[in-house]
Amino acid sequence: MSIAVEARNLFKKYVTKKRLGLIRSVTEYVEALRGVSLNVRHGEVVGLLGPNGAGKTTTIKILSTLLLPDSGEAYVEGFDVVREADKVRERIGIMLTVEKGFYNRLTGRENLEYFGALYGIPPKILKDRIDKLLNLLELDKLGGSDRLFEEFSLGMKARLSLARALLKDPPVVFLDEPTLGLDPPSARKIRLLVKELAREGKAVLYTSHNMFEVEIVCDRIVMINKGRIVAEGSPEELKSRIPKVRALEVHLREAPNHIINTFKEMGLEVSQYSQSSEETYVLKILTKNPEEVVDDVVKVITSAGLDIVKFKLEEPTLEDVFIYFAGDSSG
Ligand SMILES: Nc1ncnc2c1ncn2[C@@H]1O[C@H](COP(=O)(O)OP(=O)(O)OP(=O)(O)O)[C@@H](O)[C@H]1O
Ligand SMILES: [Mg+2]
Image (tube, rainbow, N blue to C red):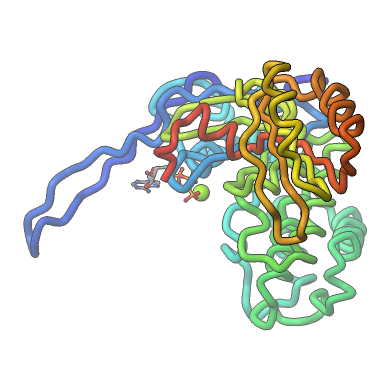
């Protein structure tokens, strides 16, 4: 897969004025990006994951030429985002905040026609593309094609924003929290479409602070915290990198007192069993390599004549990964 987006060591400081009273104010600097580097290849969805204020939107704005970096470089389809901004703009689709820039008194279709003309898309191609996008995002089904934008629900607005981002059929798509505030069906529709874009060969950079979402949408995750990249990899890779002790959770019909010592003799750490609400006894065995001990654990239990009701391996979550790499001060 070829590289579509490349950011190298981006720095960005915002200058703000903090009011001290009616007249007095002091100048403050916010270091939004402190050396961000990342790549997005054609055919992959990369999730930029981080808490509020981490620098996600700032990164997206720099890559889409809406904001200049203080230092560092970035390229989209080989073009410099600072010196060749026009060329970059021709090749990207962007969805920032859902509602920005649409005309309340135009219908969904008319809004897309307006932006299509603005982007210089030939009328014949534009009409076909709008039909396709209205259909793909089910805006026609929801009645959004011919209704005024001011009557749209948030979900319809989000769908129209994504349609606008795709009007140019760009090879690179930037989506800044595209499912924020949407109900599950709309969020799901957008997630499915994003995956489809990557299958078509587009490069997608997707920001979110929702761990669950990036895990199902993204091929690769770049974790950002306080303007720095703290970890990067596929969800599985990231989870396997944390040296966390995992737990085998075994639910039993009867109390397992008499086998606990056997586990201890085997060198396994057993957290005391507890009785669960479903009237089963839950035995937790802590281990670094659950895959290696699972057979022995089952053997001990069954040869003691106990029935296993349920067996569960507690997996680390992306949240564990984030806390491990970023520390707990993510707020
Ligand atoms: N125009 C601005 N002026 C001053 N500070 C800003 C400006 N825009 C962003 N910041 C600050 O820069 C930092 C990074 O902001 P950014 O919007 O990139 O974060 P984010 O990861 O997108 O957060 P969120 O999840 O809340 O959208 C924050 O501390 C924010 O307060
Ligand atoms: Mg943001």
